[in-house]
Image 1 (cartoon, one colour):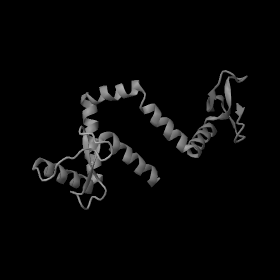
Image 2 (cartoon, helix red, strand yellow; image 1 turned 60 degrees about the vertical axis):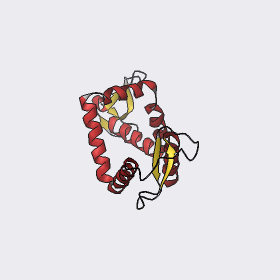
Image 3 (cartoon, one colour; image 1 turned 30 degrees about the vertical axis):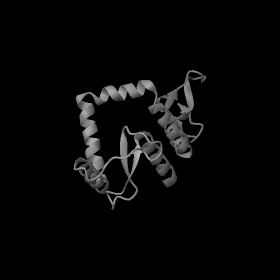
Image 4 (cartoon, helix red, strand yellow; image 1 turned 90 degrees about the vertical axis):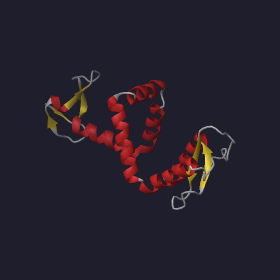
Amino acid sequence: MKTCLKCGEEKPLDSFYKHPQMLDGHLNKCKECAKKDIISNRLEKIDYYKKYEQSRASLPHRVEARRLYAGTLNGREALNRGKRSWISRNLEKRKAQSIVACAIRDKELVRLPCEVCGATERIHAHHNDYSDPLDVRWLCAKHHSELHKKLRYNNQ
């Protein structure tokens, strides 16, 4: 039996995490208190943890693992589920995308170079207002991504 330093309750040793640097080989706070501390720490420093997770996601071995997974049957099924989910949550956006794609196909709308850098490869149509689907800004993939990062940052 051991007394928790945080809650003061006496509990059996299996209610404490093992810790080789402690005299009895177990942490001084019980598992429940340790979990509460971890949750409160994450909530207090949520911005730090979001940035940390984003930086980890772009590590080369993780990018490669995602690429390999996307090529598997399970990966393709997960991607399709994600696409269907996004479409069901964003019907207006999807409709605007379809209208633009059909207009480009029918030559009613012509892709222009990127408004920012003038690039002509990987050009995206950005909608400022989805209620007017043919009113788009032409941006390369890089600048379109940067614009959405700014928009997400400003909406926080």
